[in-house]
Length: 296
Image (tube, rainbow, N blue to C red; front, side, top):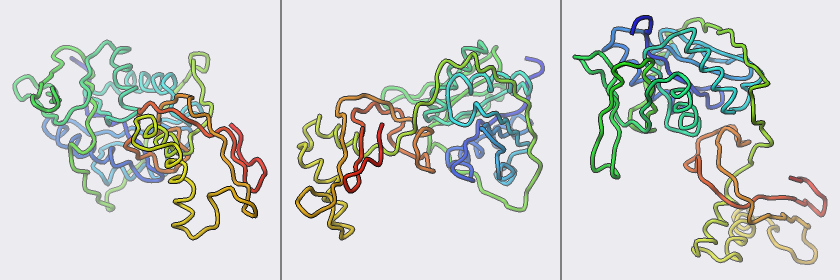
């Protein structure tokens, strides 16, 4: 189809660096752009200026685009879908690659539906069909016992998400630099149907409760491993409620369900093998030395 060019990578940051998933997408994206004789472009969206976005050039990008808006500070479907729709309208990429993670799984199919184009998720290989000149996406079926090959012959852009680890990360060349191009976004707050309530601190409590529910651990053993266990390792006289020790207490709702969304975690690193897991159990109150230090 006329007017569509280049490979666009939906990039993500891990602190000030590109995420490992993004560097893997850069490697396969560079190979695909070479086969198509097109350019490789990297897109970074966020709530403020994307610092160090120019590292994308060192990973092989011909152009790096940044889109910023306060509504993009935290990942929410409605805001990122608006932003990506505007980016596609302006850049008209031939191929868009996402990582197979919480954002990619959420955003890629929704974007494809809005653009009325095809999408292939969880790809383990990508190549260019030399006869048709289109992206050929390969994904496993039946637990990896078979592989399906998909091509979007008519619709554009062609969208795919890539399984983490399917490709090695691109090599970095610090001598290659460039100027990050700023995109103008116009996001409509009235179309945002969700809001971020809070960021999760960590998932260890909910995972322990899951093991209790599955009869792997008793509740008393799980509590011991989360309290006395770490205290013993660190040589602290804590993790227990006996006379003379600090009143450090956590009040837990063991039944409240929630979904692990890495981008909403308070940790500066969003790498987790538990992305999209549905868990139960939240800390409602934390008392330190008898005083409320946290309240949910």
